Image 1 (cartoon, one colour):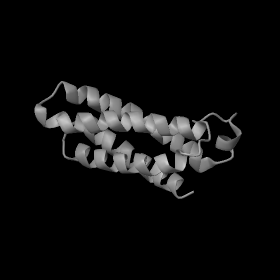
Image 2 (cartoon, helix red, strand yellow):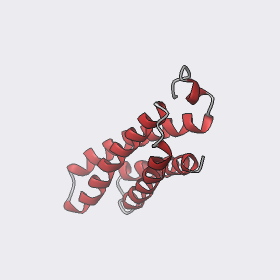
Image 3 (cartoon, helix red, strand yellow):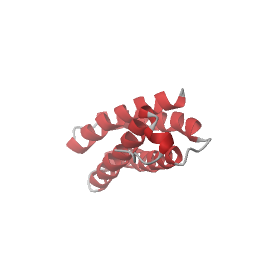
Image 4 (cartoon, one colour):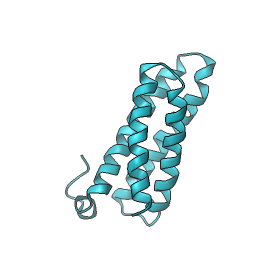
Length: 117
């Protein structure tokens, strides 16, 4: 749960949820990328996208916490990356890919909401 002591976060339930979803997505992507690294070459794109999304979602969460003027713009980029990575993860039967895809879809949804806020 996003810190309740941060006024602009505690007063904005959508932002708090988006921060939580971004951090969860980063965790799922790091796990998925690590698992993909030990598998076949067909997992290379999944690994790359997961690493990109992990970096983008943690950056977006940090921007929201600091109330950055760039957060809204980054939200749209983050949502698009989450959607692309979820599509890639859906192509693979591995449990880590399926879990990651589910988490990413939820993150994309809240990032879209933040981009239009």
